[in-house]
Image (cartoon, rainbow, N blue to C red; front, top):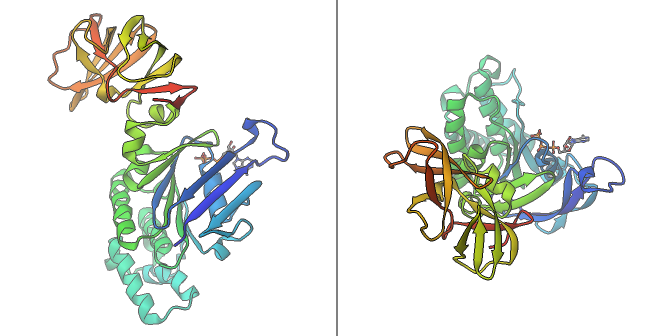
Length: 356
Ligand SMILES: Nc1ncnc2c1ncn2[C@@H]1O[C@H](COP(=O)(O)OP(=O)(O)OP(=O)(O)O)[C@@H](O)[C@H]1O
């Protein structure tokens, strides 16, 4: 296993001049030895570019990649000792499940007994013990992808295992099971795992730390809790959560805040000037009229989604959502409600970056 340090940028075109010429803007970040990471972001944000630079399939146009302090920037995936699992199964159809799983170990010329033991362990973790002697050709797509996952995880001497949207071909129910399985396998094997996905649920259930990316930038690296509670960038607030964070323009002056036409006393020290207040729908509450930290809003919609109520309202020019208990007393759409938006859970942004 290795600690991985990136200090690089990448442009597919020569002589990049502006930000949009870069697939990855200059970044400096580290992946801890034995950590489970997800690279999360919308299509085109640079996830696969970053993964390919880590694996050695792609050399960065600037900067370096280090494994345990050693510069590996020009090394191939084989030299870096990387295992990879792709979107679609990469297996040998004519071999049995056991032979497929054993293949990376045979290549390393491990003793037969050790191979047999390790293949048995991995098959058990993936619930494939009963299929070891079946030919891969006859198996369904998801079983084949499980073999691919197993082949990625079978060696314990790799620097890291990289996954590029590995559950794409798996049906939703099994996907859920496999995500949990991968997390369990990580706890048992302590491999460094890096997992690319555009699905926040997949990233948040699998990884200890999630790297959130947008337009070639890694805007935050953090636990599910940190991304939810203290998004470092408005993109994270918006992208993580369902629905995402509410944002309201705020003017801060001398300890007072003007939010949606209402003047409120700031509950903590804030920079002066124009800011954005970010508050998760989970933390917006109904309040009494003129309550401290509350603003008036017009209720536009109330949805009962079974486990809770989702309120949509308009405060000044801003749309605000609030998630309330399903038995909350809520007036009909059109009514004025007071929404508690200031409190311990509020975050403040300037130029899209968290400032308080
Ligand atoms: N081989 C290439 N040549 C030129 N541009 C590329 C190449 N590969 C990717 N890009 C561009 O680099 C940017 C980042 O792409 P990348 O594939 O890394 O994003 P991604 O987040 O993995 O997206 P997806 O989930 O759609 O694969 C995109 O603008 C893409 O069009």
